[in-house]
Each structure stands twice: as C-alpha cells, then as structure tokens.
Image (cartoon, rainbow, N blue to C red; front, side, top):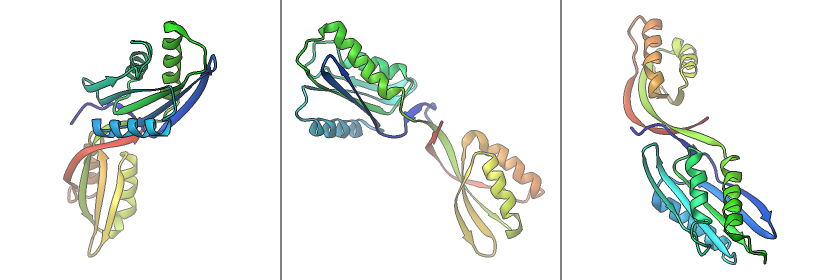
Length: 211
C-alpha cells in the first residue's frame, strides 16, 4: 500500500479579477494521468474563448508522483510553474487544476502574472475539502443475532462501517476498517465472544476518507 496522503474530495472553482483580467481556477481530483487529461480537455472546451487555459497536475502522492504543468502561451515560468508550486506546497496528491485567463487589455508584466496565477491557485487549494487515502481491510464475520447491536457499536467505535448484512441462521456482516484500527476491533470481538468470533479479511485496498 502507498503512503497515506491528502486528495481533493470534490471539484471546486473560484474566480477573481486582476486589472480587468479574469482568472478562473478549477481544481478536481484525478487518480490517473488519463483522468487529468480528460479534465483538462473539458475545461479547455468549456472556456474555448479564453486567452489561456493553464493546466497543472500531481498524480500520486508522497514520494511517488508524476507532475505536469504548461504555460499555455503565457510567458515562460509565469503561470504553470507558480500554480504547480502552490499545488505541490498544499500537500495534495491526485489533483488536477486549470487556471483560465480572460485577458483584460492591460499587460500585467511577469511579476504581476506570477502573483495572479499564484493567488488563483491558492484560492481553490485553500478552499477545497480534503480526504486522505488510507489502506482498509474488508472483512466477513458471522455473528448470532443477539450480538448485532453491540457489534455495530464496536464497528463505529473503531472507525469502521458495515457494508452489508445477510440474515440467515446467523448474520453475516461485511465490514470495512482502516488497517490501523482492525486489530483493535478483533481484540474487542475476542473479548465479548470469549474468543469464538473473529472477522476474516477478504480484501485490502485504499479508500478515501474525509479529514
């Protein structure tokens, strides 16, 4: 499993005006380069009449990332690079951003452009809701009916969730826990069942949880 890192939970957009130029920053989650490219294409089509659509993305997180930026016709180093710097500094991974500019007729100069693109990037990075990629276990367990409510409470206490309940002679529960909380749940189960009931891991994957 990869190291836990923050990701945007939703797509978000913010707009600001700098000396008559409109800067529209749109940020979204993207879990592959293809997803990032699809998003960038959608924004370019939405704002096809804009002066520039400056794209940046970071796919992955921690020490394993793929980064990309383009100035999209702005003077070199004045737009894509500062936007990527903001995104990198935010700690977010699996994120794509496009900053759209409608030129307002007044040249901003290189320093002005860097400042405007930096602030546009910050406006969405600072406002977006964040989630964290964490490794989780999916587990199955069969329990008697009389323990159902107690086990639901234990699941909640250990930051888990019930994915499914199948009622037959016993109740078969499909559960999900952050890996780091799973053993605490197992220990509690051993305690309330005199060691007779244990969950069995059937899958381990990554899930995004709100922070």
